[in-house]
Structures are given as structure tokens and as C-alpha cells.
Image (cartoon, rainbow over all chains, first blue to last red; front, side, top):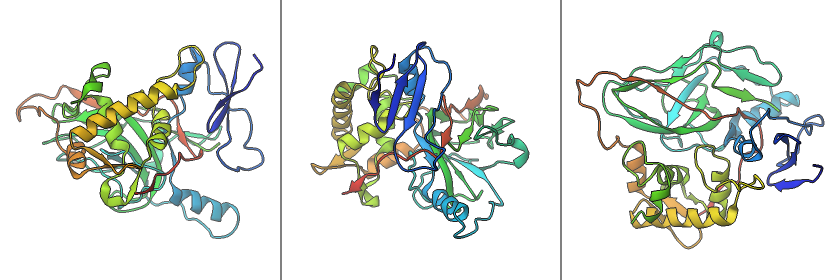
Length: 189
Length: 142
């Protein structure tokens, strides 16, 4: 197949075996960015479409990256990186003041140790070990999203990345909240 | 009320009419934020959320069925409005205080204090990475 299908804000180029290529036309990127992004083998193009996840880099980090990479202002590596679980979905514009975190007893942001991350490769970083939050000892929350943030203190810090999750109940019988090894993937592309 | 719920999986928290009702509510800005979603903007955002089947993916051509998706979303929003979870001023949708309370509140049937732990709550982050791609459209001022 050689036809193009408009899939705003992406162009989707179907392949022969149900896979294909997605070109993101959402905004200007570095000159080498507009390249083929093969998303892997899928059983069908519907699956491929669903692989376009809702989430991304927070505006705070986008601005810091731009200033740093273009020589405007240096950006210092965060001393702390943590994950916060959300009961209301975040957006790229989310800040420490606008996210709504889980509130079950025992909830705390989880610090992500550098040793829990694989070194970035092929523009991708993943968690090498499972990420396990503190146990829920009372009450409950149903989470729908998360942010990666530069502080372990609830209500503090700056959002770095954000995303959605499947709706997940965390209670005294379904605990601790856990992210499996390699389940968290953050890309730059 | 909640007429659109039958075709979706139940809300795991047992509070909303369905999981889709929870997730649609969870994507709407709270009234106090001064921002809201026009229905088409919200539909576009939901189309990228792997865990929310709105709009459905067209089986034959593999792209979102926005016509069916719009009808489904409007039905869900009507349910949320009827339940006092969401409100709209004719242009944008916002989350009410009741909606925020339900999203942030406990599940409907919390376990007994001495109930044994059944296992970890595994968090499904979706089939693909999050990354520096273009963000979806922002809401507009309410």
C-alpha cells in the first residue's frame, strides 16, 4: 500500500502486514526528527492507532530543554526524580498546584533511583526494576494517570513528564501500587 | 440516568456509571481552573488515551471513528451532567465539585480493615512510551 491516511496530528503510512509508520506533524522539530517511526509489529492497524499514547513531556521540561539545548540557559539535572499517582488526568500544562494525587493512607510519591533506570538507548529510557509504592493501609484511590516530577513531596516540584494509566484501584487488599520492570518507557523522538 | 454505561466495562471504583464515565470526568478541567473542553477538543484528547475507548477505532480502516465517537461522548457527557458530575455552558465542559469529590474519593466498597492483602495493584501505563511528542490541544477559557 502506498496511500497516505490523515491521522491528525499524525500522518499514518500503512505497511504490508498491518504495521506502518507514523509521522508526527504536530510542530516543528529538529531537522532529523521527521523520520520514520516504526512502532513495532501489531496485529492490525487498529492496534497501531491505539499505540498512540496520551502523555508526554511537561511544558516546564520542554522549555528547560529548549533553553539548555540552544545555549540560552543551562538546565541542571534534577537531584530527585519521583512518580506521583493521579486520580485526575494531567496535561502538558500541569504543575505542582494543578495535579490531583492519590490520597489513600500511606500514599507517597515514589522516588525513582538512578539505579532503577536503564541507560537511555535509541531515544528511550525504561525502568530496569519494578517500582513499588508504599503500601495502602487505609482508605482507597482509583488512579487514572501519573506524572514524573522532580520532588518527592506531594504538592511540590515541577512536572517533567505525564501520562495516563488504566483505571486502577489501590486499597488495603490491592496493594502496593506497582509498576512492573520495563513498563515505564520515556522517549525523545 | 447513565444510559450510556451498559456498553462499557464497570467502573473499578464502583462510583461512576462505567469506567468510561470515570475517565471522561477525569479528563475534564475542574471549574475552578477557569478552563474547559469543547466537546470536539475533548474527543480528540480521549482518542489518544489508550484506556478510554472513545472514539472507537474503525475496524476496517484502523482510524478513529469520530462520528460514532462524538455520539458516544455526548451520551456520556449527558449522563455526567445528569448526575451533577459535569456542567457545560453551551461551549465548554467543566468538572463540578461533586465530580472532583467522586474522582478523589474512596471506592464504593472498601475492604474490611482485617481483610488480607490479595496482591499488588499493578499499574498499566499503556502499550507505548510517553515522550516529547506534541501535546494534545489545550482547553479553552470557560
